[in-house]
Length: 253
Ligand code: 13P
Figure 1 (tube, rainbow, N blue to C red):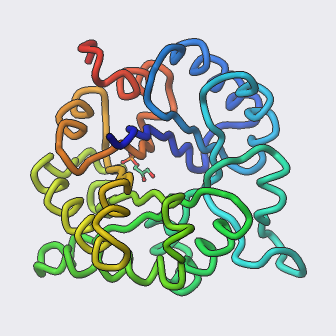
Figure 2: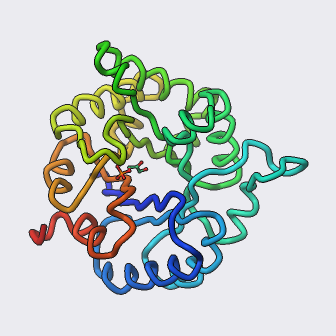
Figure 3: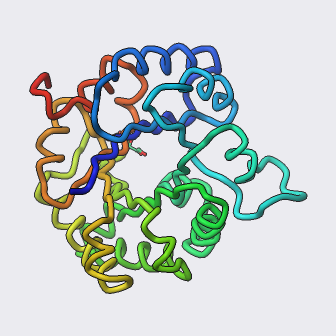
C-alpha cells in the first residue's frame, strides 16, 4: 500500500511570525493523522517553522532550491542550507517556477539529481497548460516532463522521488480537475514511470494531485486508485481549511 502524502505549499505567503503560528496550529490539530504530512513555507520561514515541528510527525519541506551546490549565485538557496535546517523534501519544477521564472526541464532535472545526491526527497511537479489540454496534448506534456525531470536518476534513487500532477489551469483558479480527469493523467504518469524504471517501482510511486484541492473535494480525489496525496496551495494557508484535507478519510469533510 502506498502512503498518502498531504502537503501544504505556502508559496509566497506568511511572515515568519505568521508561519510559526500556523505551524503550531497544524501540529496541534493534526495529531493522530496517519498520512504522511508535509508543509513547505518560504525560505525565510523555515528556521522558525523547523523549531515548531520538532518532535511532531509533520515534515518540513522547501519550495525550491538551487541547481548548484554553492558559489556565486546571488539570491539562491542551496541544498546544504536546507538540510542544515532540517528540511526533508523539496518541491521542484512547480508550474509557477516553470511559467513565471522560466525554469526548463533540464534545470529542474539538475535540481532533482542534486537533491537526491544530498539526501533530500524531491517532489517533481508536472502539469499541462489550458492550451495544451485543449489541444489534446495533456498526456504527452506530462510524460515528457516526467521523463526529462527524471533523466539520469538511478533506479536506486528513484524510490525517494514523489511526483505531483498539477494541471496549470487548476492552480489557484478554483477549477479542480475532475477525479476522473486527474486519475487518467495519474495512470499515464505511473505507466510512464513503469517504462522508465519497472512496474514494481511504479507501483510504489506516490503521485500527488494539486490544483484547487479543498476539504470538499479531497476525499473524492483520494479515492482514485492512482491518486496518492495532495499538494495544496490556497487551502493550506489556514488550519481550518487544511486540516479537513489531511483528515479526508475521517468523514468530517
Ligand atoms: P492551489 O491549491 O491554490 O490551487 O495551488 C496548488 C498548488 O500550486 C500547490 O503547489
